[in-house]
Image (tube, rainbow over all chains, first blue to last red; front, side, top):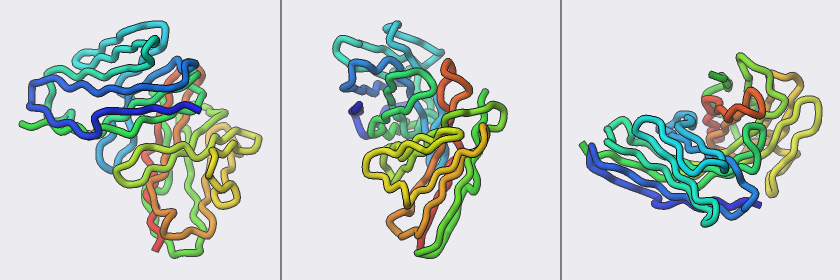
Length: 113
Length: 115
């Protein structure tokens, strides 16, 4: 089955700086890669996703890049703000929508004011 | 966007008792729902796929007789933790999508504590 690795496990950045979180996956059939943000005790919230037919997607301060050849994808957050502090999970799926997601191990991002 | 609701949000039960958790899609019909478990400071681990009108598909290592899943309608899936033990204490979250072209959305989760 699919295996998703995520790095780093913790990340601290100064407010206003950029944060990058990286994930690798093992199943070459995976074609959908969402990123979720989870605050303490709350549900994961989808923040951005990308499909395998594109290499990059951006939504305001958040961007995701995908390298299918290397089987890795990354989350980029620019101009970080204190409210960006949370745990971020990457995930991979071989089908978009109605298919199970395999999650990475999570990255605890702390924005230092 | 799609709304997935879970109930209860937290529950405390005694060891040996059973607990039922409900997952509802409020503004769409979901033929498939997913149940995840998340231990403190860990990732979400898929437990099972709930299929409306048929048996659930369990992931390897998940006891189907302990975690009973029923998906009796297109808007409701239930997870029953039978004969709960302290090691079953965890955060249980369901998810569903409106259709195959829509992303998965998660319920608000249920924190189960077994004493």
